[in-house]
Length: 305
Image 1 (cartoon, rainbow, N blue to C red):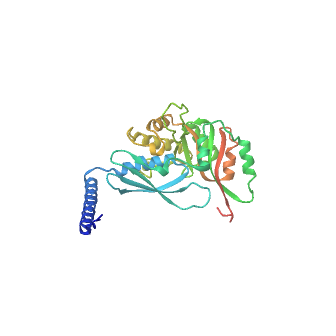
Image 2: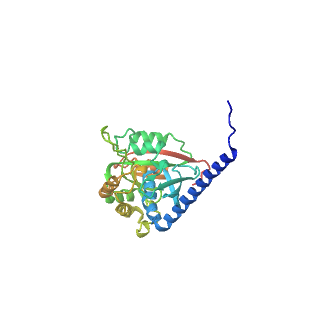
Image 3: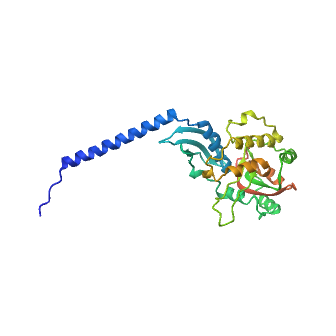
């Protein structure tokens, strides 16, 4: 049986045609993408306001900063945040987190779906009957070396959710001035226990004065112990700028969930960041504090602040 030799010239010509068509399609897609960016209104400020803020709300275990938008590829844009784990010790290094909303409204942010580790547990059991009573927390704190200064990241749970007025009184009692090291838990995590429901679990709603990166907060004046009032006003203003069509599923948040939390305006607890451990311990003596859950503790070996 005779086997014909392949026509190598024909093969080469066919391969060249395939490569030429591929290159032409690539250039065409690139040109289309650029043209769309010129004529379609990609609102980078809204992306930052809605999705950058949602990422911070849903991930209180991370310090997320320096958001910036970049032109994406084929109807997508990318909004990038830098972040680090919210640990009590020295920085573990910054990492980039990408949020990718498309022209059609879908959003991808797989690495920003909610808190993890010990912080996740401290947040997730916020509304449940406490497994850790104040006396146990005191014992745990007192068992730590007392000759070293220590700082902590912790979740403070109140006996009853507080209005802004009650929380201001609480702040004045304990000289809490708010700021970057205090965040307000406006709603604990919600889980649908009905197995017949297709509703996904939702993250806690945790708010801090830096959530909106100046897009809203520049209009508000903070007042030290009275910060809960402008913080709530800022949160409500942010929720008021959301749309029911905004895809917040990548952050395990929901418009109705946020709207309900903003309407109620009740604070279920605090997230305190790098507080002195001694100051955290003092909160356990307040009858309005149900318990405190330590997410992380670090010691100052050198004895410096």
